[in-house]
Amino acid sequence: MGQITREELPEELTWDLTTVFKTDEDYQKAFSQLQAELPKLAEYQGHLADSAEKLLAGLEEDLRIERAFEKLYVYAHQKFDQDTANSTYAGMNAQVQDLLAQVSSATAFLQPEVLAMDEGLLKDYLASPKLAPYQHFFDVLLSEKAHTLPADQEALLAGASTIMSASEQTFSVLDNADIDFGDVMDEKGEIKELTNGLYAIMLRSKNPAQRQEAFQSLYDAYMALQNTFASTLSATVKKHNFLARVRHYQSAQEAAVTSNQIPVTVYKTLAEKVDAHLDLLHRYVALRKQVLGQKELHNYDLYVSLVDDVDFPVTYEKAKEIALAALAPLGEDYLAVVKKAFSERWIDVVENKGKRSGAYSGGAYDTNPYILLNWQDTLDNVYTLVHEMGHTVHSYMTRHNQPYHYGDYPIFLAEIASTTNEGLLTDYLLKQTDDEKVKAFILNQYLDGFKGTVFRQTQFAEFEAWIHEQDAAGQPLTAEAMADFYGQLNQKFYGPDLVADPEIAYEWTRIPHFYYNFYVYQYATGEAAATSLAQGILTHNQAESYKDYLKAGSSANPLDVMRQAGVDMEKGAYLDAAFAVFEERLTELEKLLKK
Image 1: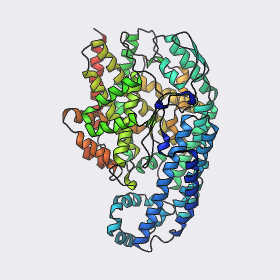
Image 2: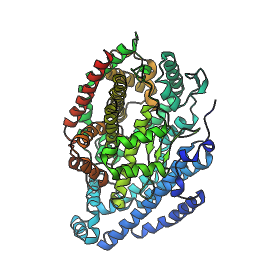
Image 3: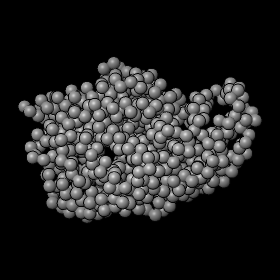
Image 4: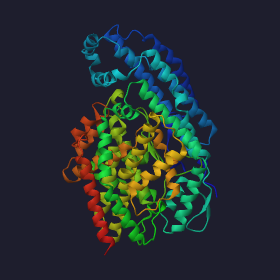
């Protein structure tokens, strides 16, 4: 039985991209217009140091071009994501990727030219009242001085961006359009095509045989292509290491995190603190094995609910009600944005054939902050909705309170906003019931979420650091080598009560975030920081300072933004606080399930 096609979906469950461009023809006109305007940037090349006025004019033209491009990118990219098998939108996506290389090449002169200016002269220019709004922008730019190449070399790298991103594109097409997981039997005994969405559902089945069938069917498909996925991932790692090397960083890790004004110590402190608390994860795995009553606990047993007698299906309509109630402590101004997202079709809700898997919040300064979902009627999907809504309201508040050049935020800050929402949702759900079984169910969901966000993402972060270190040391990243390391890493994290299934050693083949260049650690730091923020909102009426963070965008360094919101990310205390909450709720679940 095949999936529903895009054309068969009810309009109200799809996002409205006509607010970006009314038609594909309007997109093409804007695309052609921007292409024609790119050569105008050359007028400023070599002349930014002529005067403060020339510097301002060149900067504003650069920003105008980038702003226009982002709108094009959102339209083409999201049209492609809604149906990756649609050849028209696949072509548009490829087209906009090529334009990205052209825009990057045309604008590449600005940063190296500014960095090459006499420091005294630049300081005089920045004293001009017209350039004052860009002070922090230039501070961040100048922080990259030691890692910026001469203009001709920057242009060369920018022009090669499409070539260097080919492995990510290949992975995306394989993972979203071409890979076939085969057919499986669902709970009703019906044969269905296995998809990422159905896989997530089947791993929560009470039937161990169904969980095993879905697990093995999915991994058989990935393992059959293990060498191809090793090639795409290896090429991406080589790109990261190459760019770090030519930009004079000590490592790709340093290049990735410090470009977001985050010191490497934040990454390393995370790994050290999580490793020091792995006993809590081992304890949770042991509880899971005991409650499930299985002689052996497998990797496909890590997601099924431990609470048998609680049925918690959640329709999308009910999920919207829950989201509004859970986020109420953030105030009416926050809820007003959430209601706009629901009523104005910012959300693409359900799975369809060819649609990109997973979920995200996207958009640009001049578009709505859209959300992609692949909805299933589970509590986990309510968390996904609230998580992505955190990103969306963060984007909305930033863009409505900051000028374009500060109208985005580092990914380090992004995950904190989304995960704070999850914390508010958990608190709301736990307070809504005195039923011990329901409470146990919610605690189980919370612990699973923490496991996936803090422990699992740190596991990914440690693997990501290892593959980059191996490549930098000249070691080949073969499928066998990566599987061997990943299998050992998985066992370290989950402990002696989990069977070392051979398939899980190939989990790295199916994780798109490994192509994002040291991104995943921020899920874990975000969860821990969000624990402090959520508690502050709920118990100390700190919603206003929290919303100041949402409105800050990139107008200040991210660690400074977080300090203003009440969390110091350079110290490990926030991680200890997060593990204390995890342990408290684990203890509560242990007591409930042993009654």
